[in-house]
Length: 159
Image (cartoon, rainbow, N blue to C red; front, side, top):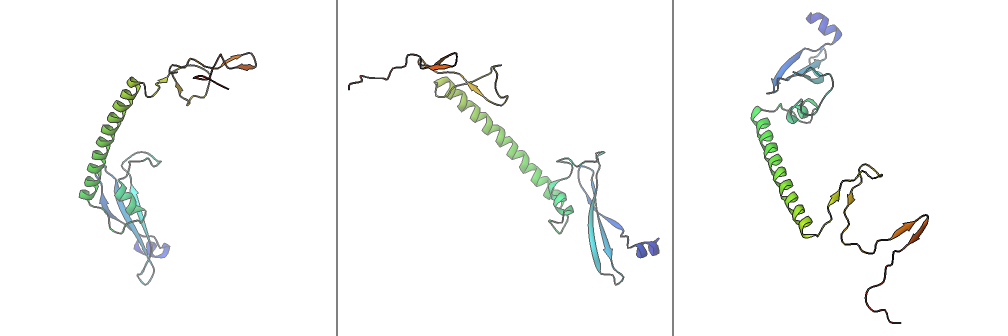
């Protein structure tokens, strides 16, 4: 088998490590007849039964190693530290969303901002319709002609 490998220049893959998700990581080094490294390939044997890559199937550190962005394989401590930091960031994002929602509700109650109104009127599905706030001089349309419904300029108009 080694003779066949040397003729076909097939490299043998060696296990470099595994992650907590069950993925195994290999490195296949191809050498020439003088024993010099010609090509190095890094491979992942996924624990998932998917054929398509999905986000989160491989930790970021291992993915960087597989793609050649880092020289040394990551340690478990490094991966767990990053994941713990991600959890902290997610918790903080939830807190910021709650505070933002509370401020927005306060602005709605004080009348500083119009509330979005859910309507089934014709229009684009992503467009938001807002409620009207004390608009007494709204323009009116009759037929194809535009009429400004009795709007009068404020204050005394002296010429």
